[in-house]
Image (tube, rainbow, N blue to C red; front, top):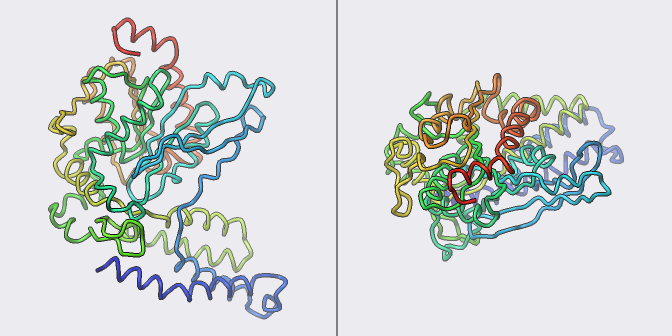
Length: 428
């Protein structure tokens, strides 16, 4: 009943948020006589803060319509390449021709960015995608909010996640493909490529794993401890709820986004409280630039999705409680996951020095598992001074991490990779 009570509470709160939004506009709009009253800036700031604390946050748009490459503006169009019940594979198509002087872009490597299915939408990787587009053809997994998937479409498990990744890799093709997984998907991506290699199927040229829980026994964080503090039945009985009747996924069992959001905020309550107070002060002072930065961040941070219950519980058990991947005991759809079978897919692991979600060593553990990849084709990077988000978004990502990712991809693509695979007798 918790989900139903939450929806009832949100519905009852809606008139207050509309009223607060109207009040903020009336006391801040220079064409309104109310804006000239004494204390109008504080009143408007109070109304807007109330509005933003109470409003619903819809899924944001990627909003990537163009990129700048070598001083030229290149149009970008977002397309749906593959659509499945729980995920859309998006392609960001760049439009250019020889008249642009950028004909070389048609031969750029292809990158599949596997976004996390762990509460936030794939748009959290907007900066990742925008940066990659300058030198690569980019696809990304856009996971669907489980409350929007009709119950008759069936369950979605961790095994299904692995199968989705394999299907997307096959659809794109592996000749010039590089897979980048951010946080949670490092585990299913490693499983997907391991199973492809074990079957003798073609694999991508490289895989880059960023801040992921390959082996959470290494430097466990508060997030890891939370997943191991309680038995699996506790999670099923306390955080799994049924989607109410006002959504297409009515009757589906999910880990609701609003519960996940409460957990996100509870990790750093003082920081969020300070951020909202600073937002109020910026509005009062008229610092519209800082206020807009706050809006932009929380429009993304507060937009959360429901996760399918089966997938969430599978992840808790497989990744955080039983550590089946690093122990060599994970079976996916009856097949044993053995990363040592991977030979012709280069490996780059990236960790943040200050990452408080995936501790140091958790992602690097992939090197201990991928023993079939020759040492010259494996590399690790620790981003100094970077937290979890800093390794894929923001200044450090753009100026410190991305140049090394770009260089690694370039070194493991094209003729050099084809020659290596032919020498080994591997499929291209």
